[in-house]
Each structure stands twice: as structure tokens, then as C-alpha cells.
Length: 288
Image (cartoon, rainbow, N blue to C red; front, side, top):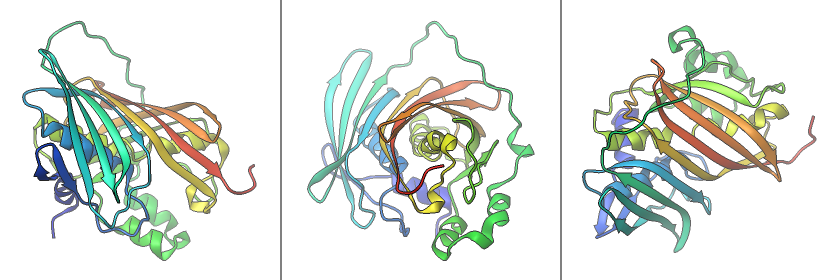
């Protein structure tokens, strides 16, 4: 049995079926829908399979229907444009004969130019924070068997939140959070696979940011949440096996939707990616 990172790489390694057509599979887990980061990562892999010698600088995606983890996902790539400097691709993900997701991605040749960036906030380093194992150990007696089994399985991405929220008795907090994360094993130096792993990880905590001010949690069983769209901009090369700081905030929530932003920094302060996402957040219970 491969370890968690090797298994993730296998999940991202799509099967070619025909020109511009690829098949992807989902992990064998008990959740009822496909993890959004998986579909983003697989769609970016599909786009990369039709591009040569160019690196993705941005992607924009919409989640249209929940993904079914029990059946394969077909990814159809439209080679929209191959220019001198930029290449554009559109990817449609299909299950049961219907679109469940689409993505547009733009790729560019390597160029030099002006440079500036925002500063990374001053936060504790990951070595000074509790591990996921320690955080789970503290709440293990409150977990259902299904959630405990999900939490105990090996994960390809390690997460260490700077300011974790209590999922069982959440108090309202500021609409912002800082999370360190990394792949638990080296995925190599190839930029395309590191970007695909980063795209996968970028969906892991971002949506939680917009519910922090409201003192609710998905653990309560009353919160309906799902990613609606997702956008990323890649600014610099990244190694996902090194610690990365995900700086997240939510400027607005309205209409049962929450808007979230993220900036991803290396531990030495280099901004490598920016993220924006809107998600569905419906609460079926009495609010505080």
C-alpha cells in the first residue's frame, strides 16, 4: 500500500483515454462527495498534459454539481489558444453525463520583469505549534466512529493551525486564520506537480474562514457548506514538501455565501500564490 503522498500522486496521475480526454479516480473514503481540492488538482493535471514548456500562472474554477466518489471523473480539455507567450486551456469535468466542474487555466513562458510583494505576517513557526495528532488526541472522546476513522487515516498534507477553533463548542472569532501546511513527503522538484499538489491543498481550510465569526462548526451537523468557485494565482516556484503559511481572511458573508481570500508564503517570507474562493454556507439551526 503506498503512503499518503504516493497515493495522492496516483490520484492526480490521470489516465489518458483519447486526445484531450482523461480519466480520474477518487480515494476510497466514506464521505459522500468528492473533495474539491482533488478536482482542482486533477483538472490542472489534465490541462498540463496538453501544454509544453510553460507554467501555470492562474486558474479559475466553478463547482457545478457534487462529485460522486464511487465513479470515475472524465476530464475533457479544450485547447483554447496557444500564443507566443501565453497558452489557455479550459477543462470540463464530467460524471453521469453531466458537468460537475469546469476550470480555465492560463500558462506562460518564463519571463523576467518588475517584482514586489506583500509582507508575510509575524506568526509562530510550525515547530512551535501543536501537531494534528496532538489536536485530535485532545478531542478523541467527542468524535463519532465515522469521524474518528476519517481523522485517523494517513493524510498527504500536514496542517498546523496557528489559532485553531474549537469545533465542538466554537466561540465567535475574527474572520481570519493562519495555517502552516506541507506535503508529508517530498514530491520532487517538477514545478507542475508541485502546483497541482498546492492546488489540492488550497481548498483544505479556506472555506472555514468565513464561518469563524458566527460561532458554528460543521461538527454540529447543522452547517451545509460547499465550495462554489475557486481561483489561484501562482507567483513563484514552490516546493510543497517545505512548510508554507496560508494567511486567510474573509471580508464578507451574505446571501448564504462566504467570500474568502488566501496568501501562501514560504517560511522565509516569499509569496508564492494567492487564492480567492466563494462558498455556500447555510445553517439549519438556531444561530447565536
